[in-house]
Image (cartoon, rainbow, N blue to C red; front, side, top):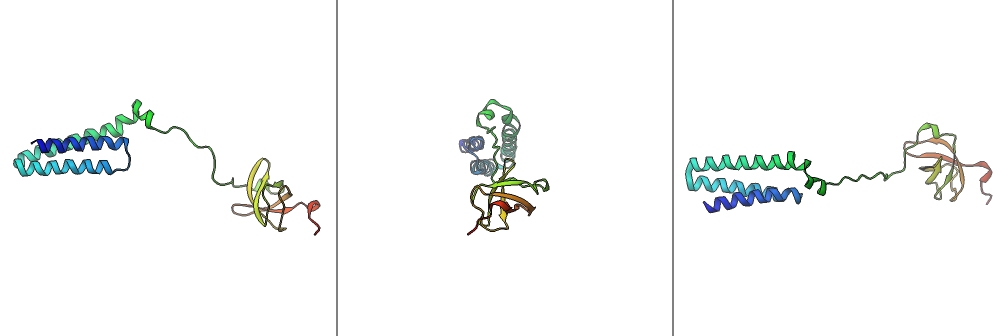
Length: 161
């Protein structure tokens, strides 16, 4: 009887620790401990003892799941362990719309022929049809590709080499 109670207790503790240590390993091991306890109950106490252990295991698992998914998210403990901060940044430059065509921008990086331009306070990936545009060069947005601007160096800034 003590082995069965020990396995049930270990299962409950491991399932409870699953809340704090994510990854499903502890929860699976806890479930296996409870399953072994049920199997041992059937071997030692027959159908009636095994049925009682199965019912107890299902009740314990149900209570643990209720606490984990219904009660715990609303508790103070969840507020301590939950991440509430959000990231407002982007990993990619903004995608332009057709309104940007005809505007003037400045090369933030050298366009050889691709790079980054700033137009109306926003940075975009760009492709220069005129070839090399140095950093700080003024460009005109002449078209829009899928995810980048098509630019041409402003006519009064073409280099004479």
